[in-house]
Length: 194
Image (cartoon, rainbow, N blue to C red; front, side, top):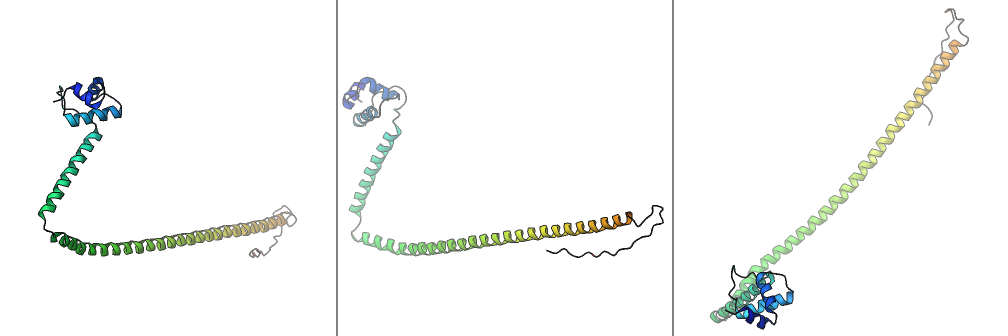
């Protein structure tokens, strides 16, 4: 096990920086990297307390290196054990299995394209129907407004006729005794001209 002084010499930093790294105190990234590299090369120093907490990046890098070594070693062992013809058999098996998957993917793509086209047509149809309903609503509103205006004109016309008749009865056809002659007039209501 190396000492803190040996780690400091190997990392080319002060012993204070090594102690800071070991205690998990903040130091520059370069100093931290140098100290951890020295620990990788020489080993962990005798340090009281729990095991040293490495930065996450250093742990990931170390795991990546170990994994690559294991994969390389396993690949070399497989190459040494497998006969030469197995590679072509594996290739053919993969090709036979992949072809149907490729066909299924092409079919799925065509189905997705058709679905998109259908959705576009439905969207256009909905927009068209919406516009038609708005046009219908505008026409209905106009018909209702026109009907009320016509009704108001007719009622006003009837009121004017009734008032004229009432004024004519008061203005000369009666003597105030209640024995006045009644004048009968016939009123014809015709629709207003538009």
